[in-house]
Length: 316
Image (cartoon, rainbow, N blue to C red; front, top):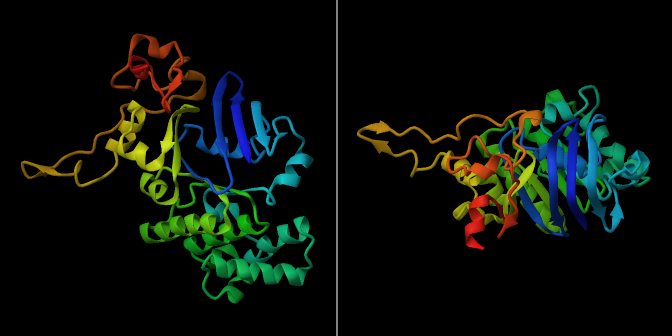
């Protein structure tokens, strides 16, 4: 359905996404994980044609064989909502504060599907029921500040689903939600993807949410895909040192056990993701990696067996 080939998003000399290649087929549920600043959101924006004006997008992005890199805004508008839709971060900022949420969901139905206002209202009501918004009739008439964070997130999901997209990109859909609401939103997205045979690209910091919602996953660091594979396999046997670091930093009974009556500190990955212009030319993780080789900083590793790491070269 959609295929990225060496997709790159650059801002001057800095590359927020570098030579990323992967496919999304109907019904796929793919997680994208990594720290803030690793290129996850920019990848999602590139796949819906909404990168910032200053971005230079190169490589290839095929939507059912049609090249979308370099496509006009008019060409993208014909694909958004109907083919590819996105749930943006932070529902309070993504919803128009002076517009009733029902009108927000009805708008694309009238623009893209040509429905009358009455038909769009009926469809919006049905979508609110599908995503589990209580008292949907009353919610249609409310403004974003009048409903809870979890309900605002459900409104955004209803908005994204309004025109029956083939691919739904969910960018940090559980941000700022409490644990119980986040769990329900995660399960809702997975169920909707299965019920609709809709592809889902689930971008998240939350490895537990990715494990629940997806079947495959991509691990990004510094704009690169450093590891990919079946979600269960990557989470149970991570190969890349960065993936191993992410998993070891996750709270769990094993790494939170007490030693001599004191709780053990969680392991952390030293340092932080460098600015775009300061990323190493070779492996982006160079400088933070606990098993770094001399060539890591200058030579980009080739992906082998789903892992882009020079350590994998010894296994081939």
